Image 1 (tube, rainbow, N blue to C red):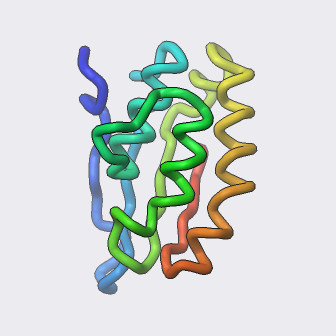
Image 2 (tube, rainbow, N blue to C red):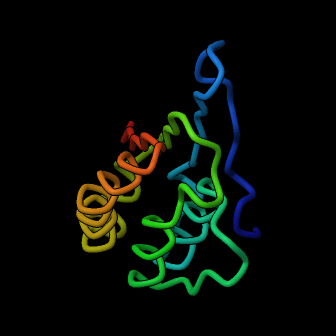
Length: 115
């Protein structure tokens, strides 16, 4: 299985500027696959380094490589991720909460839904 196999883009709303990206938690088995699936969903650049510092940096820069508006990432089967990778799951949530207000000030509202 390659990274990004389970990332799907689905319409979030008929209004322009809204975008939802689905990440299948069942495809995530380790830190690298978690970071890879999130990077694909968020259109991170090819130089993404698959570590938490790189994730935070690219998340802060997300307005540079995503259209303005609203972007929602839905992490399906998040309980699988939480169970298998509890520390990485908490780190994902912490970085998201700390970083996305910066993106909002730059015109990109980012939301993470754990389902």
